[in-house]
Image (tube, rainbow, N blue to C red; front, side, top):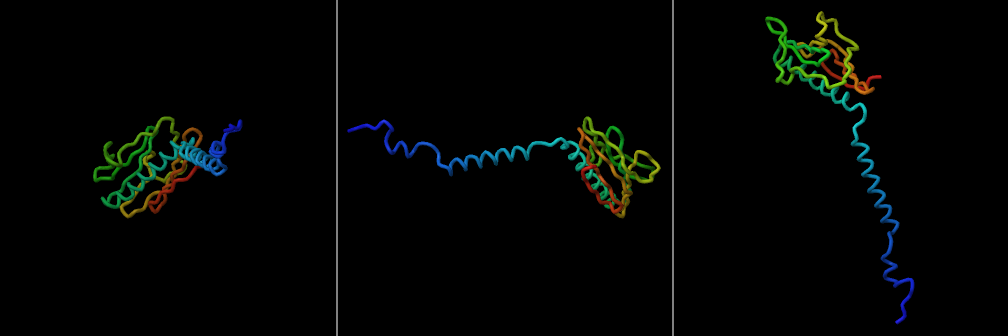
Length: 164
């Protein structure tokens, strides 16, 4: 039986990849790369997450003031922020372990008050009344060149957007 130098037909049919197999492999690689790029944190992740956390706590404070039928105030310092409740004997800070207690700013977070209400105390940026209203304020959080704005509206609503 003669042996061909190029091999048998069976070996040649099984060798290599078809065009469909190569395209499927490229598609899988492209999907993996796209997923990695979408999941990779951007430069403004810290500022965005902190702005969203602040907005969520502001909404909780607005709801809390309605539930307990007492005004609450957002207190912002260079170290962090928290909430105070107006009692008969004056403003009382929420405990550190409380949901509306003091929260420290992350390292290297730049905080500025772009707009504040006309409240007499410099620490109290916004006040939430028992009817759901609030004194408007805008707080800008920046980290590594990215900045996010937290806007508190008069109706107690909060909006988070990228600062210009």
